[in-house]
Image: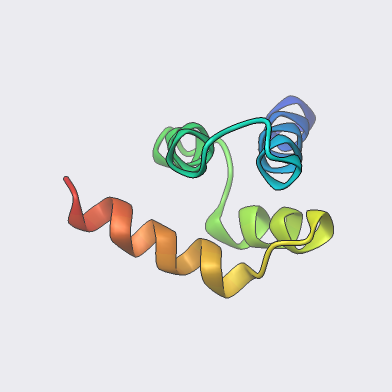
Length: 69
């Protein structure tokens, strides 16, 4: 996991919280990084908590995304 990926995920989630990006677009971009093994789900949840999202909600959305495959 590198700093660039962490900043990218932080920026995407911050934009989502601000209303600049739609929910499924934001989660799709973030989970693409997870699928590429560039970041862990735990780290995504930590970043989400830092921008005002609940980590449990991110985990729930991940399960939803996996179910849509």
